[in-house]
Length: 287
Ligand SMILES: O=P(O)(O)O[C@H]1[C@H](O)[C@@H](O)[C@H](O)[C@H](O)[C@@H]1O
Ligand SMILES: [Mg+2]
Ligand SMILES: [Mg+2]
Image 1 (cartoon, rainbow, N blue to C red):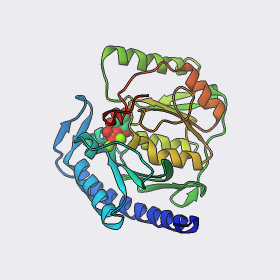
Image 2 (spheres, rainbow, N blue to C red):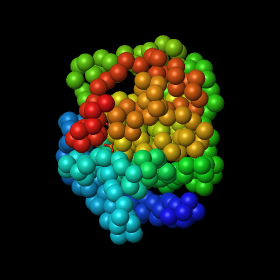
Image 3 (spheres, rainbow, N blue to C red):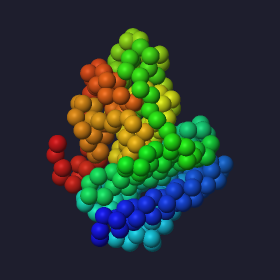
């Protein structure tokens, strides 16, 4: 396939991703008004509902019909033992409902996230905010958009003028909570303007892309929380890296994102790590 053909092909994939994200968002909106059958996955606070599964089934079946040779990494398929392995193949990386705990409580921060990678590189991302209809899109080299309007990160370098976002992750043991709160205390005493936890990694990462906050860090999220948002932040002029300061490791379950390198590196140097098993651990990947 020539470069021109690839370009046309991925552009078509992005159009289909937007279509299916909007369709999935409507399913979430309907399910949000119905009785929810809640169960748990890795910990008592790692919630999942039938809607998570139904939305993922809708997304993957629609995409597989259109692109039968492509690969799929889905949050709920992974929970059921599906592979979390990124290869050179065109691969869709899907979080059907990001913010399931919010969804269960009708707290209006819930998104559908669809990332796409090819040759092991993130190519585009689509994140749809199901409760307010905001659509974030970005394709490598083509800019980042919110409802079709170009978005840009905050260029702030000074943490004392920063709003910092994070998420709690699934682990709640005392050691994890001590490290988690210690990290928050460091930024509050910097003093950053504030810390916010909104319950959806993907929507929080989109707020970095729109410049509504200066930095995001988390231990315990997954590849499907990061994939789409990483493209959106990069195309909005921001940086996405590992919590060590090295390059993003999509399967590592940790991330730092910011509008500027200076802000990202400041965050990296303050953080005490929380360890989570990699997403690709069952594929024998040791890092
Ligand atoms: O499970 P979903 O898809 O709702 O993702 C959330 C994770 O469950 C949280 O641990 C994590 O802290 C974030 O809130 C993330 O959005
Ligand atoms: Mg989810
Ligand atoms: Mg998620």
